Image (cartoon, rainbow, N blue to C red; front, side, top):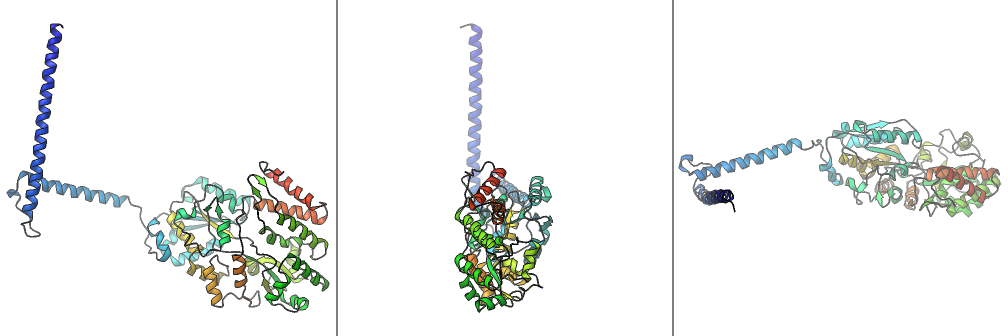
Length: 506
């Protein structure tokens, strides 16, 4: 080893020894200071216990370590106060509203941010007044936007999509969806799971189960409705008395209890100079809800036996002269409210808002269930995934779609058949529900029973479109353009393949 290297290693060893000495000294001082501090802290606490409450010791009489304990405690309290103040400053402002009952579950979830509710007409805006009445403090936080478009139109769907994509202050926190297009949105990732909003199954227990079935996608409830729309058969009392000897709903129901009975009644009516319904497509909603399979299952078109039965009975009504061969909603169909037609298949809103006041039905009709339970229409409210105030959105849905007190009042004042079994039961018990359209007859019991007998677990996003193809095929079959039921089914398959080439129609 060279002399220079030996000298370098010697110097390095001295440096390391010196460093170790310094570290040892510092550790000794730190350990000594720590013990002194702990001792002082114990002594200080003991001495403090001798002072009367509220008095402070003379700082000159305490040791350095005791003074440090005091200063450290003050600093710790200052840091805690600063943290608390910072947390309070950054906490989301809360609106001044006090919730009670089930609604109290949303109390701590509501922020001060505003939300927007989008719809195609004013109906939801009118219903929101019940929310505003109950929570006036929140009125300025819930904005209603009426797009003024057809609820089942592509324009409405596009407008909602554009608003969702745009985001910002115009973002639609809640959207209103017509029954016919609801699944277009519910099947997407846009809509939140209702349970994620804090709305529990206990809160929705009074909803008619078919509305929950309809709005459930892959096991997740994605929307709620404030209304139920069970169907019924609406008939003229004067014709019933003439042909069947009574207009009592129970007796007329026995005449129409199934489709065989319905056709027998059609024979009796025809013999007396009357048509059982206006057009052969009047019966379609009653048949659609009897499907035991969805239109599309596992990527394949399914033509349910009830569709075949609809095509067959509609053809019998057309060929047998049991109808006036009108199409639903055309001018002749509307005119038959004052013609020779015995009845119409119609739901809750149909009775109140579709029967012309000057017609022979108004004030001269009653309802019965008819051959089957079915529904027609309905509107649903869904909350979008980027809603800035989910707690407030949840409170809106809960109030309009679950709160019995609010919904009972809503039904009594608007004639909406609300989606709340307890509210409807309360109205029936109070003798409320009769109206001038039905000559004072109360339809609530019949509609309540019909709604309870429904299941809509087979709903899909394709329903509205394929139902339209079924209508087209049925009309062509009735008129003779298509020669058979098989040809009508082939027509449906062709239309489906053209619109949805990825669906197997074979």
